[in-house]
Image (cartoon, rainbow, N blue to C red; front, side, top):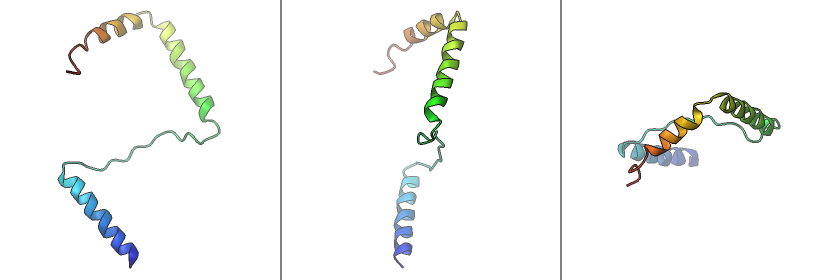
Length: 74
């Protein structure tokens, strides 16, 4: 009986959110509790660092990109 009441409240809340123009989505994120999480972060960071070293145009692209954001936060 109590479960039915809770389910009804949850459904009412979800319906209100949908009426407000929102929709539910499911997002999968890395599990930071895994024992190999930190090592995987280090591995990916090394890959990115090596890729950045090899890309001679990256600094120019970043400088041009940051110069193009003026007025976005007004």
